[in-house]
Structure formats: structure tokens, C-alpha cells
Image (tube, rainbow over all chains, first blue to last red; front, side):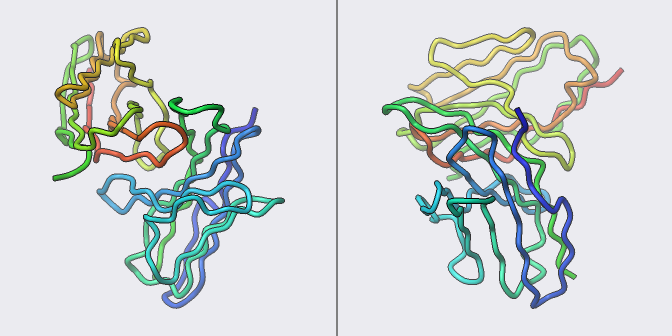
Length: 118
Length: 110
């Protein structure tokens, strides 16, 4: 069973360009989460998606950032007009579907995309 | 107040030592608790979930005190390969976003 896959692993963009980060969840997982880790900081939640739905985007910056998880294909995190402060590691995690309430579902992380903005 | 607080360390311990990490969380609605480990420039890897009754996995023991909103991780007989950053993680029930502490760095020295 392949794990969570992310690509590219490393991405270099100049200020003002767009960055597209892709994430394919583990087989059988229908929930995708994006987290960002700034240098020397902890991971911070950005957005939670299920197929074709954004469930929680409370951690997403209001401008330039968007995410989608289409019916077919990977989840995409898109950053428009990147700035130096966007340089970070972006991790995607997935978890299986929920069955009933009160259960905790472990999230498994992909290897991350390291974005460098020059 | 941070949602999840951990001592950043570093903890430098000799091989074979026992080391304990602590963590406190502020959201009393938290229902799910985990320890992850993160190696330098790698993704977090789930070490263990933490249950109210406490749980053990080999050399690792996790405890949860809901009344004090406190989680601990004990590592016995430390190995060089245990060197990593240990992340205390909480969430509310079900499929909800994880809230991470900044991590505690452990270095096991030969």
C-alpha cells in the first residue's frame, strides 16, 4: 500500500510566480489535510478537504492561497504571486473515512514539498 | 497561551538512558492525542496514539491526564536511532485538523 505521495519534492520559484503542490492520499483515504512548516517552527494546519469539498480552510491565508481536491486526480495547493515568506515545507496528510462519531483517525504524512522563493 | 506546549530541549542523553517528555494542551475539547517523531527535514511519522488508560509500544510508553490536560512520553533504553524531534499532537474527535506542538529535540549520544 503506497503511502501519501507529494510532488514535487523541491520547488524553486521567483517572487511573483505561481507554485502548484500536488498530493495523492493513501489508497482508501478520502480526507486530505495540508500543513505548513516554516523554518524552525511547528507544523500549522492550512486546509482540510474531501473529494470536491473544502471542509475547513481556517488556516489558509486569505489571499493568494487556494486548494482543491477534484473527483479525479490529486489534491492541489496553489500559491499565486509567491513571496519570500512563503518559503517553507508543505506537508500533506491523509486519513481514512469516518464511520460514526467519537473515533480518532490517525493522519499519515507525505514527504513534503520544500518551496524556496528567491 | 499556545494550544500545545512542549519543552523544546534539546535533551542530550547517553545510550541506554530513560528519558521523558511532557506536553500540555489548552483546548479542553481535545479528544485525540498522538506522539509523532520528525527527523531533520523529513515528514512527521506517527509514533503512537495516546489513550486515556495509557499505552505501551515496546520501549515507548505514553500517558494522558485529561484533568491536568497533560500528555507524556517515556522512552526506555534509548538508542542512537531515537535521536529526532518528538511532536505532541492533539485534535478534537473524528477527522479534524491536528494541532502540533513545536517539538522536543532528543539527541542520544554513544
